[in-house]
Amino acid sequence: MQVNYNDMKKFLENFDSESGIASIETSMVFMIIFIFIMFNYEFLKFQNDMSIIALNESLATERVDLALLRGSPENLSSLFDKQLHELSQGSYFNAIKYQPSTVECYRDLSTNTPESCTEKSKVIKFIYEVKRLATSDEICDLFGLPVNLEREVVTVNDYYR
Image 1 (cartoon, rainbow, N blue to C red):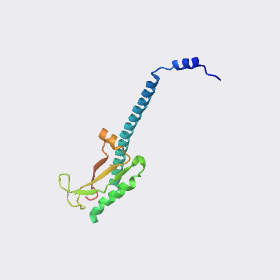
Image 2: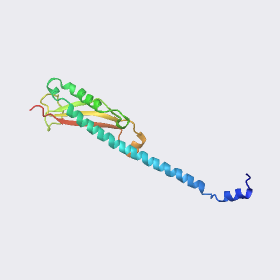
Image 3: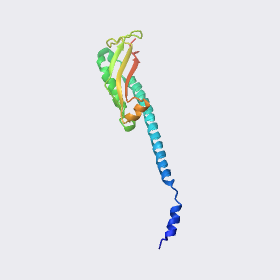
Image 4: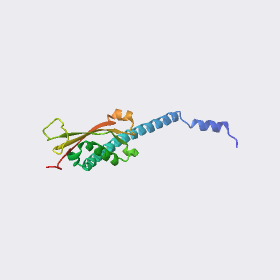
């Protein structure tokens, strides 16, 4: 099979000089689409993390035994932490790390200063920090999405009247 010079010349004339530019534009479009997907992923992951944190908080406060206020109120924070760690699975889509919590007790709603926790405490506040793992710090900074969250959970002691 012989290739004629004229055939080759006709074949090359069919190519436009813009074919190289079209390939660069295609790669730019793919890069922009990929960046858009990354931004959407981080935003949806933030929403997922926040819903998981809120769910874990509400379940942990429901499982905390307020009868500890009568005997050993210092165990409230460790029980709350234990419940949070049991509820978090630690998978990639639930990559949340909870820091140990502190407990503040208030005698009623009108007081602003915490008191020691007793069975007469009406409002109990758990304060802890959450770190969202498996996130892109650069994208979260760009969107203003926090990676470390300081959380407060308030529960009302209606155990004792």
